[in-house]
Structures are given as C-alpha cells and as structure tokens.
Image (cartoon, rainbow, N blue to C red):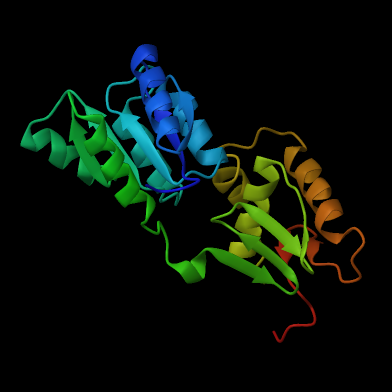
Length: 232
C-alpha cells in the first residue's frame, strides 16, 4: 500500500466514483473527483497527482482526449484507463493515446488498487527534471512547492505554472505568445493584461524580502528569469 498517495478519479458515474473514493480512502489513498472530461482535464492540469484514474466514456470530453491533451501539455502523470471497451484493439488505442495501463470493466477493486500502486511508484519525468533552480530559487514539480533560500513561497496554481514555464526556459526570453499558449492554453491574444497582472504578482512573491531580482521584463520582447550572479 502506498501511503499519502493522491489520485484523481475522472468518472461520470457518481455512484461508481463514490465507491472508488471510499475504497481508496480505506486503503490510505487520498482522491479528488471530476465528473466530466473538461473538469478532469482542468484539475489534472492545475494540480499535482500521483495517478489519474480515467473512465474512457465521459461527457464534454472523452477520456482518451483528456489523456492526449495532458501529454501535449507535457504533463506525464501516470494514467490508468477504466473502460467497458475491453477488446485488444480498445486497449491498444488507449495505450497509444498516452495511457499507462488499461483495466476493462467490470474489475475487482484489489486489482485496480494494485495497478494504481504500481503506477504511483513510477516517475512521470526523469528525476533531474523534477526540480528547477535559478540562483537560490527552487521549484519542485513533484511536491508542487517553491522555495527561496529555504523559505517556502505559496503560489496559486496559475502562478506556479507561470513560474514553472519561466524556469524551464531560464536565461531565455519568453514571449507573451509562448506564455498564452503554454500557461493559459490560449491560441489567440485575448487583448487583456492577464499576463502582466500574473507576472507582477509572481515577481512580488519571489522577490519580496530578497536582495537579488530574478524576474525581468524585456521590453518589446517578453520576460526572462535569470540569476545575474550565475555565469552566462
């Protein structure tokens, strides 16, 4: 049994979802629930989970589409697909869409639990890519935490994604278009100051009470995070 594991159940059958949540809780696993594909995609994108348990047939957005979009966003949380479609071709399709495991319905919960525990021990990305560092600022993608000089800095989900993307591209100019597409999932300019507002809030949080500024605005180009004390 995996202690303190946190999973997301994306299941439109509320009775089945309630049963799974109760059974996982009794096994020592914390779970959140989304009742449709759009909500599940949002929650899986905005929060950190060890495993996603995804029903294939979902309203608003089907399960395979959810998985495909998560992989496109470079989110590699392990996924267990649940489906009444259990033929070989169905399983192959699910795995090729980005699923890590596929369990046909009906199933025994003990088998589901064992598969979730196995997936929970996997690393979605290499360990060295789980932590980003710029100077004395550290972002841990696994624990979803940010620290500077050892002091934890609480961030809202969108602020975390913004900082994560900036730190992933540390030392490089990140344009507004890049941020709109990779942090907000917009493929058009909404003509608002949403980026400026979030950058300002983020800058205040990661630079307040610290001597060295890290996040800069590059006029006419975008933004960059860099420690000037580090070698170029």
